[in-house]
Length: 167
Image (tube, rainbow, N blue to C red; front, side, top):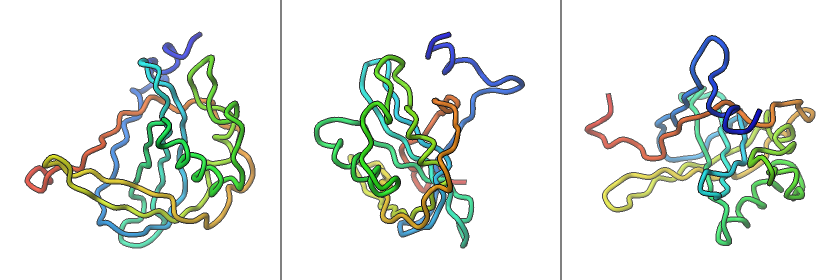
């Protein structure tokens, strides 16, 4: 078994999960971290993905994704997010596995935490992009979860559709 086989094989009885970030107005939302992954692309670049489900209000259940590439400019933001959610900056081996390119054991300390997030949209080259920021920890994850090291393969959409494309 290798990471390619794990990532490309659907779960029994179904196809890989497909998540699409929900459309909500810019603003602050309370939510629960539903998924977290730190992974290496085929090109060798590392990425961090946080999926937060909004709790309560008009947008209850909406899914928001904080997605960052890890490089010299962004690694400080990843550390800041980890400290906010777990209370510490974990060693790299807890975040990502260099051998497999998959998420490390920190995933169990992240899933289930309640956080306040902020969504801010911006226009770039005629397209709308949505940024999600982790603002505040509302409640730590209850206890470290025994979670699979890597979530199901996830397809994501990073751009919000233009108003003319919305249903």
